[in-house]
Image (tube, rainbow, N blue to C red):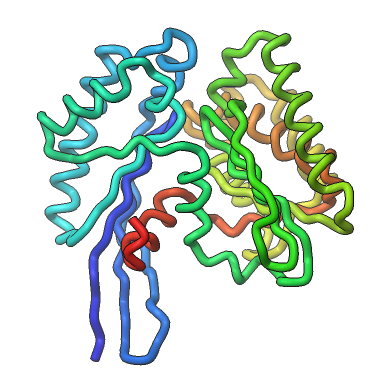
Length: 298
């Protein structure tokens, strides 16, 4: 007998806020099938508040309340049975983060959970990486967000080590050279130390920016991008103005600036781990939330 369940995940990031509605289709003795029903992305850059001023501004708080009201109505229209909302680095680092989520709950009855980097990585891993990961090969999983980047090392199909660093696309746009240099050094040491005994490490990239880079590459789904391609693409992006990246490449205004620091993070991770390929399975926090909800992990 066929069963269809409607689940939703809300990802409140540093650069944007997303609602993913998914149909989970199950048949007797069959693995569940997850079919995307709707994805809504709202460009509320909370990180610009949190990482510079240390607080979520009144203006962005009001925008968040409106967004959550809209998401609530959309979930009702779609007939969503269960949802889970996660807020990451920007809300976590803002001194008024808890006050903001409490007010959002009072005004919209949408409950938001502030999660740390490790929980974020664990939720993303609940997505199916088996299409990408071969059990006998090592991988460095790199999830680049607006406020932080999570690095997780896999070897023989097992998680060996993981670490979250306060380096993200929005944060990098606002860091001084010295601040950025210190964190780059820490990341390089961690990656080199954790991959030194591994041969032929490949990267797995997640995040909106690497998904966009992959889409622009025209690569067939499942095929990796090379380090040479990533370096060439980075130089190509850097030579263009912000306006050209919007008008000629068709990037959204809130993607056209952060795509450059994001590309730099992936390239450095490849360089320091010795990886020559990056796989892009197009998974993210919202996908992980839906799967974790289905399997009762949240």
